[in-house]
Image (cartoon, rainbow, N blue to C red; front, side, top):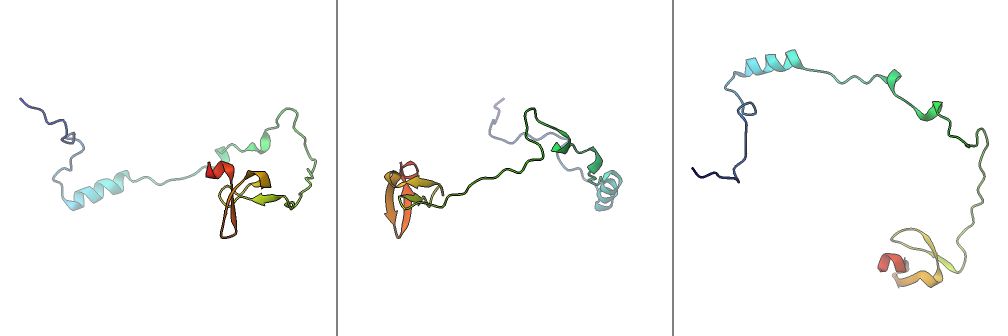
Length: 100
């Protein structure tokens, strides 16, 4: 007997039974479940301390604006030195890595 391997394989349990609409609705309402999220059991990172971590100290970072010899790539949005400029189109500049 030839076997058609391209035919979908469907089990008898997966095929819909010839039940009435009322029976299907009654079965769904009897087995319906609601999604309830228990927020008390959720683990948060607030209770964990990493070894060597700096606690209760505010970090300060000096932000330096883009210099005259730098540009912002319009593809990766990183600031590069002008030697990394691959092309400029309509005022938009693109780096060597993105154009590579």
